[in-house]
Image (tube, rainbow, N blue to C red; front, side, top):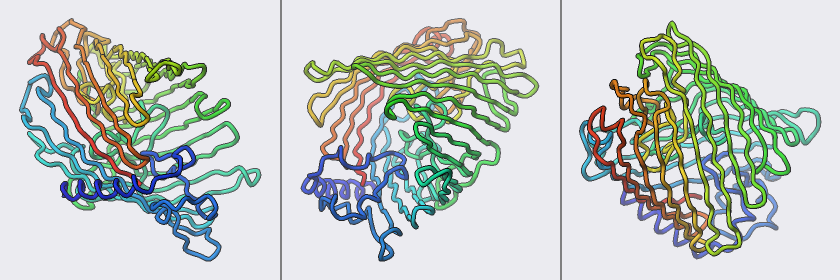
Length: 466
């Protein structure tokens, strides 16, 4: 399976290199959310360039051409090696594992008002030790399958879309709601959503249950123990690069687990994000507050996250210096029924870097980085991260919110230091290569609560999408 994937990527990339001539700036932006790509412009032959993929993106099914089909796929092969997972505590994988993933889709448009989008996932893991995890393998299943009904509002340019079925979600910087793209098996949801764009405003309302991914063929099921709903509003300024979000998110989970124990969780989140870019600067700052109930106790949690950068556009390699900083609340007393641990709900995969050891729970971190464009197709990023516990009475958690170290009676806050280097090669619109190296050096809290071996990570990835 993996060998066939690699051979397919090589052959398709050769075709892409030979035929790619149109500027990528003139084409629809390829997204991890493939349903956002719009190829309806190909109904008019004049903007076509003759590239090999155009015949797959617009397949007319009636004489006027307003009923058409778009086809696409993504092939990804990724190798990962993590030495001293959980800092050496527990069973280990000495030789790494290989991921292979296919994400084929079909997008049927029936006029301006109806659409059906279907996407499958076939994800395999080779030699995952000591066990296959939920994010490793899903041999064949429905990743997305939804129908859109587009209804007019006040005039021909304004409409609301109703979407029902299985679908991926992603909002803002994906700090709370994401498709979990980095790992092999993506996050998806079953439910209904309504959304509309009116001028510079966009509003989304949805109710969802996450999908519980299983390893075998067409065996994924709706997770009835968790539910998610939201009202999410965005206001853009000048362009979609500048604006702010304001939102409410509700979440229920049966038997949720934190450092202080397990209980039913009903949590509400209100938040706001401001983002933009101007005069070389870019910014993305978000504030969150959470309240609700955890068993017999009350929830009172909060977080602040920022990513600020400056690009020196006139210098060689156009360096971008950036600083990410996060503070995420933790529980103040495990013996008290009240809970102050922030819940990141469904965050993006590999939240703080490729090594992905820690998630945004009970945490303070500072994350400087330097990005360099070596050529038009090569780029590199060098980054370092310092981590502390926000509360000395709470433990640390992984990206999915699983407790990986309880507080253990330690009053130390410093968790450790992470260093990372990424190298990216993007030879065409359709093809991308990436190599990453990371190291995590444990701090005093890790040393006082169990094994404290330095963790090492390496990955290599090739991705082809059309």
